[in-house]
Amino acid sequence: MSKLPRRFLEHIFYNRRKFLENVVKGNVKEQDFVMEATRHNPAFATYGPNGLNVSVKGVGFVVKEELLDETIEKLKDVVSRKGNAMERVSTLLDLVYDEERIDFSKLITLELAKKHTWENIKDGGEVTLLYFIPPNIAFEVRCEAEVHLGGPYFEYANILHDFYHAPHKVGTRGFPTYVLNIKEIYDNSVDAFGKKIYP
Image (cartoon, rainbow, N blue to C red; front, side, top):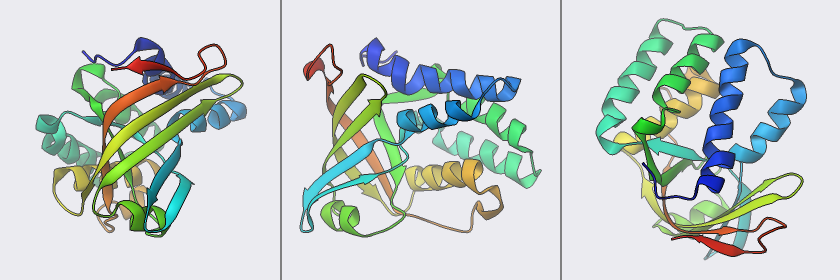
């Protein structure tokens, strides 16, 4: 199990899993989707040739390296059978939101724009994520970024993005992938004021 603080995981991982479980049960409201975006779309800050830059990206934990190939094949199978939206969400719960399958030391995201962020860290580098969950929860996550232009992490991130957002495009696109190795976490919530909580 992860050494990451439970408070952080509760807000960023476990509550997102509960949201997906409620989607399957048909027990979500429109405002739930707005709140859920805050758990998945942190501000993504970099510094490099293009100066100080902040963008918003969809970020999530990644399955353990030894499970990548198996997970990719199972996701492809659901797409090839034209699984509906509920089957896709159920598959995500089984494969991507099972805590026993997750490498909690890494986060992953795609580079869709290839502009300021890309120029700053296309050869790797430091990234700081800021999660803000209204009205008073916030976490600052400092990471070291690896860039993948091929291989299992690249394939996993691309298929996972399209599996959820654009299943008709799975396997037709390939965006650069950032694997973010977590180095430090600070609790920036109103009751913590930047307290270091990891390591």
